[in-house]
Amino acid sequence: MIDFHCHAWLDKLAAGAVRSLAEKAHIPAFTDGTLADTRRVQHGQGVEKFVLLNIAVSPRTERHVNDFAVSLAGEEDVIPFGSVHPDSENALSELVRLKAAGIKGVKFHNEYQNFFADDEKAFPLYEKCEELGLVMLFHGGRDLGFSPPVKASPARLRRVAERFTGAKIVAAHLGGQGMEEEAIDELAPTHVLIDTSYASRCASAELGEKVIRAFGADRVLFGTDCPWDTPANTLRWLGEIALTKEEREKICGGSAKRLLGLT
Image 1: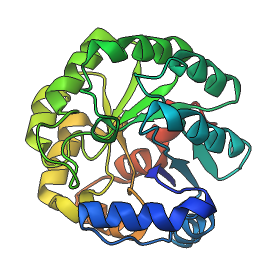
Image 2: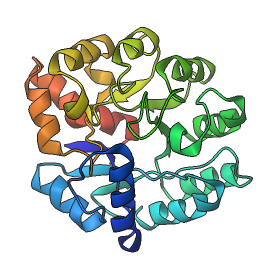
Image 3: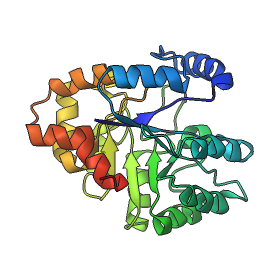
Image 4: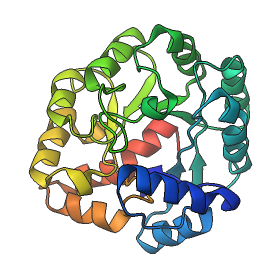
């Protein structure tokens, strides 16, 4: 089983990051934010590998978060993603560096990075990701810590998908947290994949099944948003949905292996 959506920080930063983010979004955390505690929860609840997402919240932090990702590139159970910021003059070279280090994707969180997903200033980054074969994972829809307007709504992500038809794009949180119906309308007709991160906390199983049916199991990735949710919670939520064994295997690992090129 692969968890496609996790977060952890350097040990010296973990406690402050978890405390700050939990207070901002008014949600509890299920780990202390360290890699060791993330491993404890993931492996203890059946996950073999997990995608660890980093976010360059500013151009200044871009190199630091990517150094952390690169430092984990050789870990057997961790699939680290980097991150770049559209206002960074080094973003394109950072993407090349990440690819050369074996990194398989990057995370964009448009709320924290403060740009709209379909802002053309980010298009050179998307083009380079498409060229390099890097997965682009976007926080989809609303974020509990931010007020509207939503910077990565399904409609905006659709414009990105239609412009970059060869890019590997994942819209987290069922394609749009709190905007699941829009995700069905806007993103299901595209090539965008979605993940199930935080779905057990904010979407009914009935709504989840509607989204999964619209996209198909081939385009759905098991994700938790750990430390904000756990594999056990997400598996219980999936268990309320009438999935075949084949569909469950695709969601819980098969689709991720195909997207990441894992054997």
